[in-house]
Length: 89
Image 1: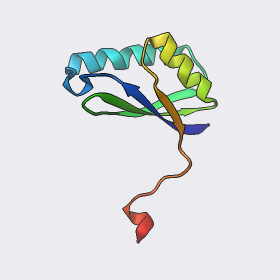
Image 2 (image 1 turned 30 degrees about the horizontal axis):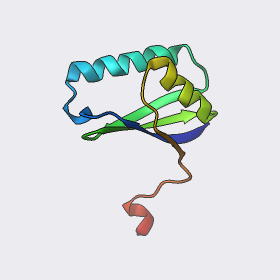
Image 3 (image 1 turned 45 degrees about the vertical axis):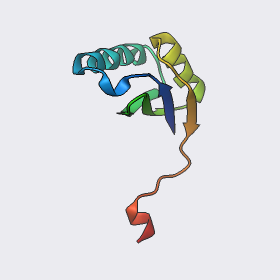
Image 4 (image 1 turned 135 degrees about the vertical axis):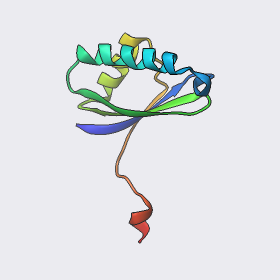
């Protein structure tokens, strides 16, 4: 499987309550339980976006997950490699 970063426009995302984030996560988990070859790794919440990291056999599976869950899915980008401070040492 390849790794992808998904951008989701969600105005006010940074102000979502713990319960709202729980409910969004639970819905995502519920949808993923009925799918194969797609896994949610983690997400980052900013003021107006979610940046989600997924492993998937095909980016179409990520789009399908978003559609089934009613989540925005504005951009899916394949991760080609990763770097960190250690890369420059």
